[in-house]
Image (cartoon, rainbow, N blue to C red; front, side, top):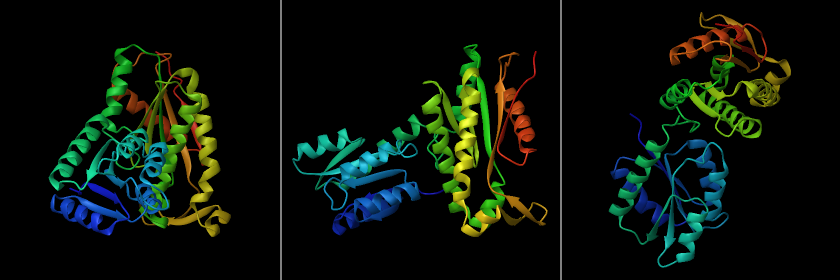
Length: 310
């Protein structure tokens, strides 16, 4: 089981040492950053489970770091503890206003800090059973949301999305680059639903390069079309110049045979109960998988809607 990761952002090396020793002894994996800019970069690339940030730092103070993290659609659920000076009420208020989940005053008791970290991580995990990479709701939340729509007798559309040729991309460029593709894909989904979806639309991350959007029938076409357009626009930027110009990469298939693989595209299968009753969550998943397979038969980004009737 991987250790919980805590990112410490503080320009004082002595404070970082105390925190690192304390948290390492408690079984946490500690990442250190000596200023706000470095801390922001690590938060975006190393996916910590919690951030501890000092309020007063050069380059970018704790309040600025906190605001930047809370504005990032993939990092907004990451819990943050702000370290403030003794008696600095303005720092405490400023940190909480910027989005910090808690604060602790320096000098602090290590036992108190550890207890607060445990509490905040527990609360964060309880509030959002999230995919660790994108922080989007995971499988349990997806199943619960689908069941809720069925129980409410809602008319809905469920969009199952995944990337084409993603394994070939991972094999050529490595998992770190693959993770960046997945996170950018999640950003596109979130922006699109925020721009043209409904307030109660749902976005979930099934795992890997598989996502789901639950929306209404009248919105599903526009959402799929915009996601595909935005993804196709950004897809070439994931490649080096040589591969981008060629329009393909050479990678082995599952049988070990080298083949030309076109640039990443997206396939979407859209399941709806507009014309027929759906009684079970499993039925939605089965139809969605079938529709995605049909969409993948076309060598480009594409979406296919369920046209079957009762």
